[in-house]
Image (cartoon, rainbow, N blue to C red):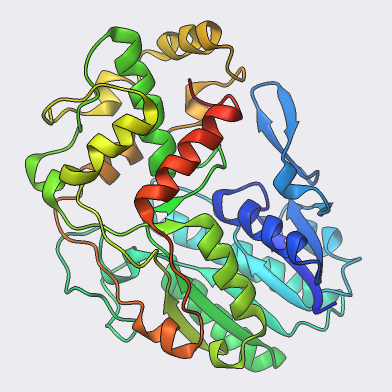
Length: 361
């Protein structure tokens, strides 16, 4: 065994795929820490166990509270690696920064109090580190690019980790994916699930599946990151000497423009498409949850509230990006991780998986 890995946020888009990868490798003891504790994802009123989390020992702990974190992590004196995928969203970026820094600080303090022989920590950022959420930025973005104006929780969280690593004598790695393609529900930044649910609304109303962003967004050059690829990069970073103390962009290795990919997404979803028609999903879709409930009933889907699958405001932002989002992956390839994924094939694969799991029609 390479060690004992504690994954925070094991039900999330990143954490669930990391857990699956580590369990499948057979080289790790895997613990999953969350307020729910059990290795399951809540869908409506029903606990649905994820096959991805089979073999993960659940740890029930509230990492947002310092004392609760210390108590919940007290028995984890065997943890050698921390994969920090916990995330607390907040509409106020300053409050979001404070909340997420506290999550990491409480986790590290709890493990230190437990006497865990921590050797390595991996955390995750994204293209916001380059200002992708603010507007056009220099591309391809490189890990050495300067920080952008905050508040943004990435930076204080990273600063805390650097200080704690120097204090505790452990290594760390920061991974920067972009639009993550995965199958976990209950994650508002899941662009594929957002598109699929929007497509189901289009089908229910008998209208074409049109790209909902602006013409500029339709033509912007974008990148995506397979959650499975990110999980493999995470396992690599957990033990690769070349990853110690480094930041790496992690993307599939290709790029897309919705102008050329939308029809392929529509084909995977079994939908007819037409020319783009800019609209605000938060205004046109969010106020009609009863439509989703009718879709669920008609297609025998999991009894899921649409708010558990999609944040329409976040979807509007993701489909409204009208500038290129492109990060260089030269650094991580030169360091030894050279895997890549075909984005078009990954989207088709994940649509089929979401359908087989009865999340979408």
